[in-house]
Length: 95
Image 1 (cartoon, rainbow, N blue to C red):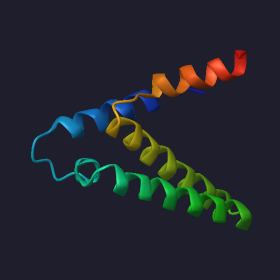
Image 2: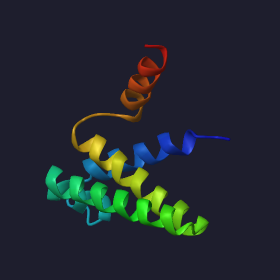
Image 3: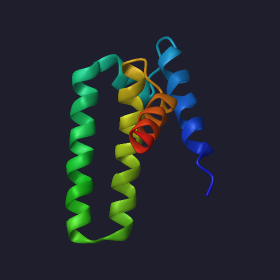
């Protein structure tokens, strides 16, 4: 399994954040601010939970992908990275 696409996606999100006047969904979401981004993370989390209860594999994967994307946007909005997240998870594991 190659997880490097998550780093690539993080770089795309960062690039969109730096593009002045971009009308991409990512740039629009970032310009809406942390409250809107947090709202999207919450919505996607609930949608994933509902999909998990329903047991539809395709829907679970789609909602999980939406959640991960919005989580990366949320991290970027607070100048945090996937590396920060992984470091915290590793520290908890070895903790």
